[in-house]
Length: 274
Image (cartoon, rainbow, N blue to C red; front, side, top):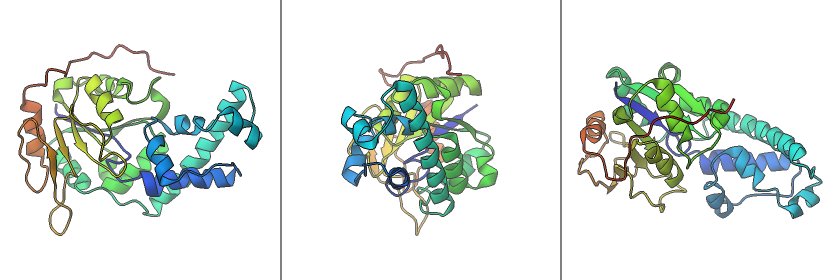
C-alpha cells in the first residue's frame, strides 16, 4: 500500500524560529540560565538532531561552572531532561495558540492521500507531544488520528541516522518501494535515503541553502490553490513536472520512477531503544 511519511518541524509547519527557538529561549529564562540563542545561533543548532541533543550542546565546561550545574553525567542528563520537559510544555502552548500556521499544501495532500487509502505517518526527532500538537493543528484532529507517529527517543540514533525511518517501515509493515517521505532538511533527507526511501523536500526557512541533490523532487512547498502559495520547483531530476501544486499523482509518479543509483533497499535490523 502506498505510504506517505512526513517529518514534522519545517514540513508540517515552519516551526523552528517562532516555535522551537522561542521555546528554548523561554526555557533558558525560566531556569535563569546564562544562554540565549539568536536566529543565527539557532541556524547552527538545527543541524543537531533532537531537542535534548541541542540542549546538551550548551554543556561546555565553562557553561556548567557559570550555571552552577552538576558535573557528573547522570546529574547533567537529569537536568537536561527537566529543561526539555519545560521546553516541550512551552512549545505545545505556542502551537495551541496558533503561532505557527501549517505549511502550504499539507492539509490538502494529506486529505487526498487519506481519500485514496494511503498509509499516513510522521517520523520526527522532536518529542511525541510536540509532534502530535503540530500534526493536529496542521491537518485537523480527524486526519491526525489516522497517522502513525514515530518520534523522540523511540530509536537509539536520531537523524541523519536512518533509524527512525527504518523503524517506521518495519512497524507499518510496508515495503520501501511503496514509501515517499516529505522532508525539509539535509539531515532528514540523509536519514530517509539511508533507509532506502524516495524523498520529496519542501525547503524551509533554515534549510533553503542545504544540499538536496539526493532528493527525488525539491520544491518551495507543496502549494495551495489561489490565493495560497503555489509551488516553485527547485530540482526535478525525475522530470515529474509538477504544476502550481504538488499532487498525489505527482507523488505516485515518483513511486513509479526508477530508483537513483544511490538509493538502496534497506531492511530494518537495528535494535529499538526501550
